[in-house]
Image (tube, rainbow, N blue to C red; front, top):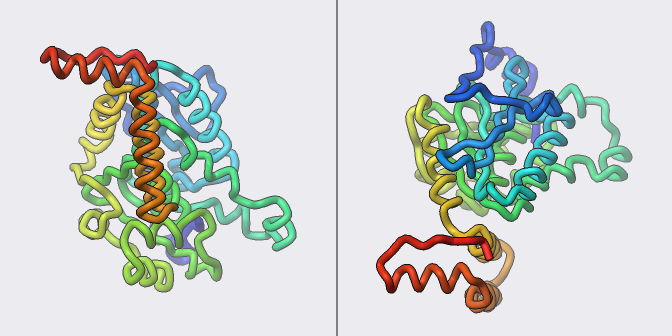
Amino acid sequence: MALLCRRAAVLLKPRGAPPVRLHAARLCSSGGQYEYIFVEKRGEKQNVGFIQLNRPKALNALCDGLMSELGRALDAFEADGDIGAVVITGSDRAFAAGADIKEMQNRTFQECYGGNFLSHWNRVSTVKKPVIAAVNGFALGGGCELAMMCDIIYAGEKAQFGQPEILLGTIPGSGGTQRLTRAVGKSLAMEMVLTGDRISAQEAKQSGLVSRIYPVEHLVSEAVKCGEKIAANSKLVSAMAKEAVNAAFELTLAEGNRLEKRLFHSTFATEDRKEGMTAFVEKRKASFQDK
């Protein structure tokens, strides 16, 4: 939830921040409606939503404006029938180095509690379509929390993950203590939260926080490829599968199995389930219509 302390921030401050890499067609901002992110469709069939955080001078610090724009972009992709998955990424240097400390520095308890501060950040975790985080560089504090809100995390070889809020006299406030513990276990999560220490991409993979590691220059393209694979399936059934997996973190095994069974049975009310099984029997590729 928090950016590094001032001392650490000085160490991380880029010397003439490198330009954000643009791939294929230049990233657009959908008619100029976004100030802090670039948004476009990617993939051979343009069925993968692509969002790139764009505050390079601030190492993509998650200010309120950026998070509001991210929510709007996700809402747009959620409503777009052509989009089957979404990729969120940052720059080569930083996915996001944390929340914007300057914005929260002078907030009071009354303001935070009364206004339910940071509650809108949860939009990322409630999107029905699968969301992939492509993490290069720093994913610290709120940046790590943002990545963990996504369904899949791919990391570049030089990525670093951490929850350094303790160094600022506070604690994670957007899921860091909860999602990190579920992902890597109590001991490592406790160590990271209590010391503010970071872990490398390799350590993150070993602990289960990320699923794959790629060279920096290939990370985004590989994340988009994953999005294309997901988007090729039934969007309706993908949403059911995502709901079932996420329920494993909320329910007992018995309750989770009951939910899974209900969702499994529900697929038999869809045309896509019939098409998928028929295509398998007929030894042809399925043509899903998201119905």
